[in-house]
Image 1 (tube, rainbow, N blue to C red):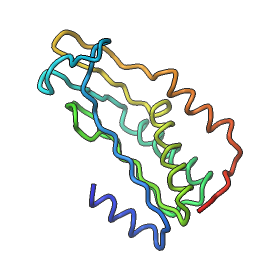
Image 2 (cartoon, helix red, strand yellow; image 1 turned 180 degrees about the vertical axis):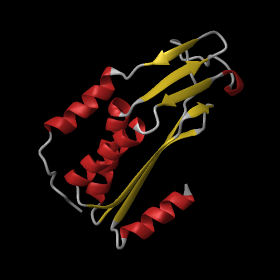
Image 3 (cartoon, rainbow, N blue to C red; image 1 turned 135 degrees about the horizontal axis):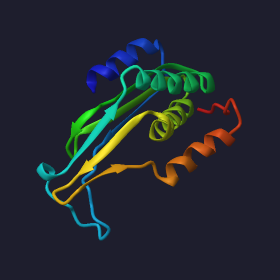
Image 4 (tube, rainbow, N blue to C red; image 1 turned 120 degrees about the horizontal axis):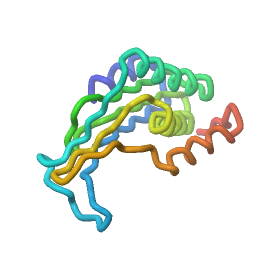
Amino acid sequence: MAAEYAALRTASGNPGAIVVFTGLVREILDTAGVSTGTGKEQSLTLEHYPGMTESALQKIAQQAVARWPLQAISIIHRVGTLKPGDQIVLVAASSAHRSAAFESADFMMDYLKTSAPFWKKQLTRENSHWVQSRESDYQAVARWQAAEIPPTVKD
């Protein structure tokens, strides 16, 4: 992560803010909130179509740049089999203003959760199942679609 931050900072020129979000694979819990196994017995496998996924990530990045005065951004999403605690995604944004950096990172994550073509399969010691986007993910995107464009930039 340090290398990605350094590259973003260099690409930014003279930023006033850099926001970095790192998403982690959570331990899988049952409906009672109890672990469904140890980290060795749980995994999350992400599948994607090369080219299609990169195109979708580029589109999300372009939408963020069109909406906020950003100096640089980075989106990195892992694929393959991951264990609880592994880093799954990194989203970073730099801008002269902190609000633009925070809002754009939030925007990119919301769109990653609903628009990026990743297929996630959870595996526990008992079963496996494909993970669907939640209604709350789509509600988060809806707020960006309803928001004024461009947003007001504040320090």
